[in-house]
Length: 297
Image (cartoon, rainbow, N blue to C red):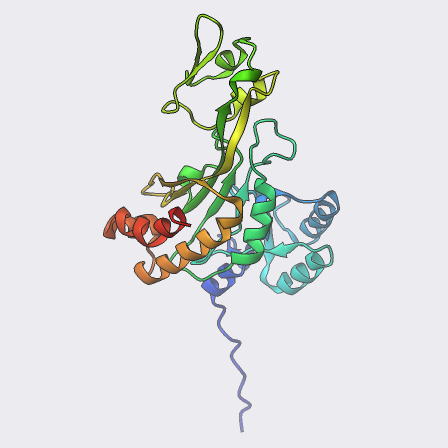
């Protein structure tokens, strides 16, 4: 009787990709994408990544992705478990691809950048722990920018949060030095004959330059929060995100993300980005069902 040889199970490339192992053109070689919310990594973790890449990467280099992740190039399929286990020794986790919430991206925020208005890094870590990997109809990207310069490109994300500050002038403290008018690049502040500021709120982009420039604290923060944008994407058919909220409180970010994802799950279609869903059924519907409850809170 002839002994039957068992056929090894077929490798599901899509399943591997969803786990952060991306097929390359080279036979049996994969790119391993690492999970780095906000693009931040400690020197100790960098050393471990370098060790693993040198040991198992077969291309001689790593790649910095456009979404702030390190990618180890040229890992053989037989080494997946070793790569995962050795990275985990230093707390380095593998990211994911496919139709799910991706690792959040963020700028440096207010920790060391003088332009930063909100703590983007803290928020990226929180969102990564809470929402990363949530199944969706398509990929779902979230980013955090600390100011209107928008380094994290919130206009190109499925859901983007940009830090903002609403300035308020306290007249008794003003000496008429005109520094605020000189600092305002948008022309939202001009000086009158006495040097006092004349403020046009329609031109203000909530950058806080006037507050930083004022030597007497005459300009103060009336409120801080997030400008929220939804529905952006790049790719073959780029779309700009639509601004749907001004000054969302920091503590409401997670609730807004949760409500958006639930809305997307109900209204979206397979392989359809949320921006296309909104375009198909209307921005008014999204605003009514997602945004309005936050306006009334």
